[in-house]
Length: 537
Image (cartoon, rainbow, N blue to C red; front, side, top):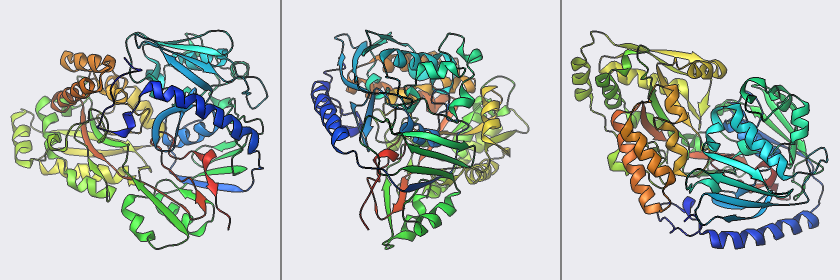
């Protein structure tokens, strides 16, 4: 059962002995309450955060991106949260929780002292509204609630129920996309949680310029692809953040490294690990490098008639043609070769020796055996964007060169992120450079690549009974040892026939002014902005 299953030795991420966690949760909740009452110092100063923007809006139930998650985590509370890089659930809006004996539901008890930024009390109805809106908007992150439902018990309890046993539940509710909004304010500004929300909800524009949360910060203004400005929420129920204002700027990676060396209260999010040695010995900055949670992969659209690359022989040739070592070099020290679609270090990740190996001769043979006289396709990615400090255009150029070596002609197609995602939603991308940041720290997160998963649907990978059966079984298995074995088989199947080819898992770095404290990288929201502090000069 979820509350009592054995701890996996494969990663500290999945250490969860719930009987102990609940006891700690109550204690942590009491400690946080005491802190809120006893640490009401005044916030002051401005913290500057440089990031290569990849968001379109700041609607917590529509947007899923590194940029948005960082801001949304500061603006909206969730039922539970994580502290730093430790993925053990701890209290937030919920002070405690109880898992049912059949592992299909969790009852959360809410704090009674939380108000939204306009002073309206937060209740169970707001939680239910928020979850329903996310699901009914049918956006990219709606998959988080697939097979789940939430109901209120009185004003301060909610029950999250699953169709099947679900070991990932306690690590899903921390997602910024499950941020709790003021239902009355959102509804007054065009929002709805109704079944037809996907076509009738009109709150996106309002939520991109206004806050409807109870978190430590509220939005002051947002200029797309330029800047997000946050200010302290005076009605926040927790400890007052150190900084009164946070300015998140859209900034190229190279400029970020220069800026952080000049500033005194600055954080750079996208400095490549490859460049960290250049600031070694600089007493004015600090650099934190940690194993990454973001992954790069290649996607081929298997929808009939979209691209010649979907030919089974060509698909396999593409896998074997890629110069994986050249791509890993872009990520710098600490970048890992990605053997499967579950990141290295996670429960159920494939061992390194099972990674696809480059074989140019075999790839050429497969191209010849395909029966196609000339193979050409569009290699799509986002223009002007880098991920973990790695330029997507550079990745595209490396791939293009690899494919040319085996006789495959590719044309690089760069689009603005909004247009790129639109073409993806229309299922018209041919060959695509895929990226994924961490939605929640559990391997179930990567079932999105199964034939019934949201990512698979974009690329026509919809008919594979073997992968579907493995994914369904892995999703509901509680025992970690059995889960790991199922995820290994699942990824082996994906590597053989799916639309997805795993490439690499870059190391991740944070560079910050030396005076700043609590500079810790989290795989979901990168930096907990409200917890960043400062040493006295």
